[in-house]
Amino acid sequence: MKQYDENTIKVFGIPSLVLIERAALAAVEEMECDGLQDKSRILIACGTGNNGADGLVMARLLYLKGHTVQILTVGNRTKATLENKKELEIAKNYGIPVITAEGFLQRFDREKTDKKDQIGTDLSEEYYVVVDAVFGVGLSRRIEGVYGQILECLNALPGKKVAVDIPSGIDADDGSLLGVAFRADLTVTFSYEKVGMRLFPGQSYCGKIVCRSVGIDDRSFLAHTERGHEPLMAAFTPEDLSMIPGRLPHTNKGSYGKVLVIAGSVNMAGAAIFSARAAYLSGCGLVRVFTPEENRTIIQSTLPEAVLTTYNSKKPDPEAVIAAMQWADVIVCGPGLGTGDAAHKLVHEVLKNAAVPVIMDADALNVISEETDILRKPHTDLIVTPHLGEMARLQGVTVSYIQDHLVESAEEFARTYNLICVLKDARTITAVPYKRTYVNLSGNNGMATGGSGDVLTGVIAGLIAQGTKPELAAPLGVYVHGLAGDEAAETYGRYSLMAQTLLEALPKIFLKKEGMES
Image 1 (tube, rainbow, N blue to C red):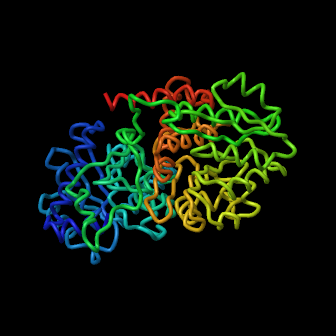
Image 2: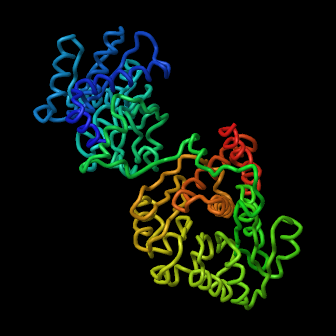
């Protein structure tokens, strides 16, 4: 964003003060839409950068609308940007009251003594809205000292909280907490959302997120020039359902691809059923389930549409595995497979002989984690879909490390082994080696339930079978899967959401895609 801001100013000639004015106006408009009362008392904390300049212009605009506004300056004023200095001068010319950080903290300390630790009682009565414009998206250091004290005091005020661009104290790149952070009810960001606003814990501090245009758009990428580049991160939105392959009038089941699901073990048939059914519901023409003989009855009775190939659970026939793979357009391997000798043999056969895209999930990943070097051998398009625990085993690190380095872990694994990594979490990351990384914004916490991941592998496989390239099918499948979760949550609630309800919701998502075609 800092580069795109600079491009807009230097290449297109839009003055920085114009961009600041537009940002401030957008933030004020969103405050009004969010229920700002007439003649409110408003405190705006402003740092010394251009984020602080946004806050200073907001102070002027709100003051001219008749609100009672006070500016809280935070930071060394001698290091303020030229824009910041200019806007503070203008605010003072209008007579808007200004209080320094030191004065504000002294006032807070005095109230703490007077009110016997009831911090902020009088201040909370004084301010209806508290605005954070202390730091912008460029912050990377830990917040300490006076800055930390100021943010803690602002959080202690019970008034409505508004953050400008991003809450101060949240890393815009990865969403990590930089010591202490402003906890907003509303965050008004500009031109594009920032990754850290959508990763946790960052999103927990943003409240409602609104993105407003201020004059920086895709042209500011300068993608057609040597020094330009497009963003490295992306997220799908509902209109992107149009990327799902359409269905032509003169077709048959062979036109929509064949999915092989190598899944299930003795007494573990459910995972195979979930993946196979999801593939069918996602539009593929045929699904073959390759599973132990013990699962025959339950799969035939539960999913009669599936082509069934069974094997001796103790010793799968390699020739049968290869024949099944030769039949398929895409292979799912791993759901409910177990980690015994049979599972090891199947995983190795797939990695050695597959000539079509492969999705490795669940137990297949646990098998691979014992010998990750097998991924360094040449292979076809490969997608892995680990949750945090599986990823920790694959990389030999702790789950907490993966949580703290979500994007980095997915991208590193994708590049190291030349595969597509779908790292599943509250915000699933899909990393495509040396290409764009996707952050998924659909879905909800009700999807944290057994079988949900099996449904996801089936959705991705169904899209690939119909001709979607794996590098698109993986993140798009994650998005569709999340939309199904949101649809199911509206019907059943998040507490009662199950893998089966996800399957029931999938047709509604694909129906929306059909609606785009009509």
